[in-house]
Length: 99
Image (cartoon, rainbow, N blue to C red; front, side, top):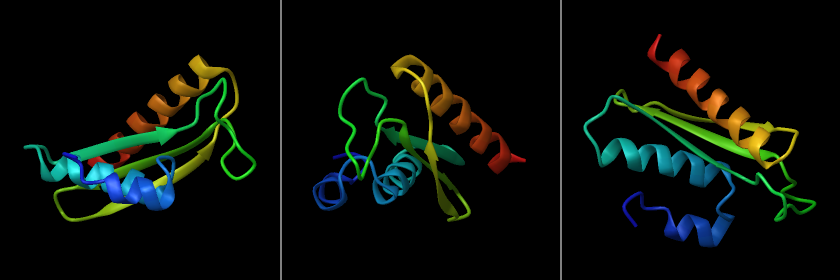
């Protein structure tokens, strides 16, 4: 509710570019920060489909200059590895946004 993504989740699913962008924008809107990042994905070990396989991750980035973007990744590994890779990618994107 706080991020304003409920309708988008119903329409596109929780793992989608639309939800990743809206989460990042909602986090920025509802806090006192200059940059925000969001991560949504399927880390497994179950839950993957043909359309949205295990390892699919969307990372949203937003800044106070009203610039928002998302990145899509197809990561490999077990649940722990996919989660770690997603966190590393999110930190990378946030670092690049700040630079």
